[in-house]
Image (cartoon, rainbow, N blue to C red; front, side):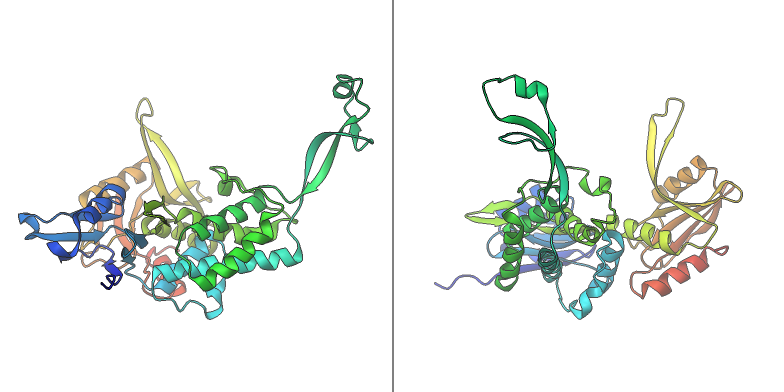
Length: 397
């Protein structure tokens, strides 16, 4: 009996698809509902769906293996090349579209390209030499090295060896440990081809002999500081951050360890807008990102404003921007109320709802003293042109 061919369930963001009841096993539907309900909407066969499965990707793109022969392929509604450009902005990986390597047609292939780029850069770094960090050590030695720890030495007066405190250059520090852990995670993911696995294992072995395989601390990427000696690690850590943040928890299917690859497009869009404006916002305007606000008599109402543009000349917030990665025909009332509240908290008279495509029914209204508008930073065109058009639509910029 021939094995069944692999089944790909292709979904495009926010476009529901219907499948006959007998095309998807019930246990597969349960796995989607139990593990991926944040990423995928699923309705089981019922009279409501005319006894069909209804499945829709919810603003996530990527690859989700469900069994040895079934996988969800969550396709973006924008070109893969543009997604890559957003990732390049957000993660600062400086790959310049991989010098023409961006020919992959799927997110799984996209993941493989990024993983291969990391492996190649680690191998290049191994030839130049990994960064070593001086670390404090204390050890009993037959000779004096560094400083003598007198109190520790006298605790065992019969031992002729000296307790010495000294510094030693070591490869085994977080900057290198994150490279090893990421390569290990990618190899375990089962998302790479045999050809890619060869170079991934080469890079992995170049680190393994002198570096500990330990997971990074929770705030590793936020708290990392770079200087003259480790500056060339910044793009490598950007690749690591992308690969680790987009790899979800694994699921076991027999002996196969399956790790999904998922990109949260809402987070990516918001982060990209912040990075783009940070680089291109004209003087004298300043950008503040993810501004935390507390209001109410007891400060018990808390929220985070995506983007705030300030005019330092008059010490005033000029624009409050709420990024919305969705494509409705018109802004919803809840989104309007939300951005108006943001503007009021900042004593700002310009509230912007920013979408990745033009709306059929754009908004430009006054709510009290606050002007509320829907604008577009398009992901369907060149980002320089899209950004220029967006800034122009703000009129004073």
